[in-house]
Length: 132
Image (cartoon, rainbow, N blue to C red; front, side, top):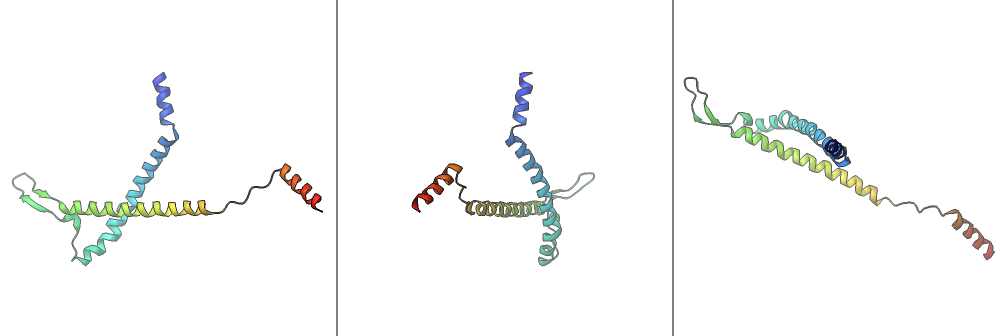
């Protein structure tokens, strides 16, 4: 039973749970950005370069023959994946930069001086009375 309790302690550690949440959110964010790239960004780029769909770009090494599929190098799919990665990386960079700027603003906010303790308040009052 010792191994199970060690595993439970490991799995329930704060940073492991945070990492799992980050991975899940990252996967969902990746899907959103991939959809943005393929559905919003790539169509205008395809029109600008003459209606080319990057995912269909390929070089045929061997033509298809009697029951054997063609052998192709699908460099268009690779280019699309690289483009997706660059946009995802840029989007994550911008999100982290935004979060860091919020954190920096939070740190730069001046803190109000702490209230004096009751002893200090009484001593200040006594000093004021003695000055009079």
